[in-house]
Image (cartoon, rainbow, N blue to C red; front, side, top):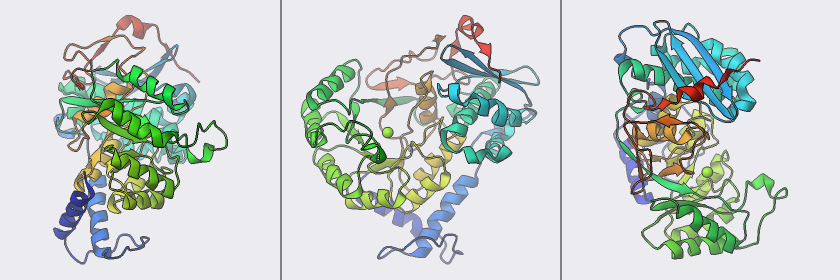
Length: 429
Ligand SMILES: [Mg+2]
């Protein structure tokens, strides 16, 4: 979305609001022409969204009491099994980082869910962050265990109700999800980098790709090989030259630049018609992110590292971001990520979730995208290879014409090979 439309929506939203609301935020330095009442109105809208439940409890007339939750492991594979009192079950495919995080899963997260009514999932997810002072773990260390359990519960609730994962957290807006191929190779010399991009992209039927610009995170500049100076400045036009105007191009700096360099590189991206600039500066430096957004026309995307609602809330209210990118695992599941998408939607901004989890991360990602009203045109994939053998009767789960059809069966919509499940053993402390 261009800046003109963005400002129009922001102003239109504010114009419909009640004047004179009590200030709810006072730490913001007003920019020229900005009105504190407008900003407070924005926060009022965002806070209402954060307070509103996401999970469709109305689908379940009777209590669904969680009786057991198990974490299973086989090689690099983690599965989470949940069972409720009447015998319904659900399963999720865990994130590979559970190999590091299983003690948090078993000690600090799993016990809180036992005996709870799964119909109150919004409330459970909110309170498990407080239980055992879990919020101190922040980020992926608490987000991945919580998301893994939430996904298993949603699978179970999907099987009980006959609804897909997406339909448990909203209406289905996107039965098919457009994808882009995420490419890496930022450490390679220019020619090799370009050849690897082409080799990767040629394996898929897509019309969108993302390149890495700059090197890796500002604070690693002295630790890692940086590559030749000026490579990014050549890479950006070369990729456009190779693919022409029909390919949607995105760029990701993973927080590498400072503000002046991000604006300089962003202007090159604008010249060659890239569609957004992801993590141009450090992901949690909100003022820098906004400074970059203010200095460029290209939309700014951010959020894969974020673990707080308030990071997104500030960036949305202060027009520092156009595309929110919560990671369904890192951010603690669909319910929390949906609130981020809805906050962005209220101000005409879009959502392109970050995708992680080697197991079936892409499948969770497309289920989530199926239910968001403000999905970007293309969503992240690194390919569809998985260590998990399964069957899906409602989708080929292939990229066709740049899109993947989202499974429509209950829950996750797949049947994992029972022999594969049987190889797993319960993880114990
Ligand atoms: Mg990224």
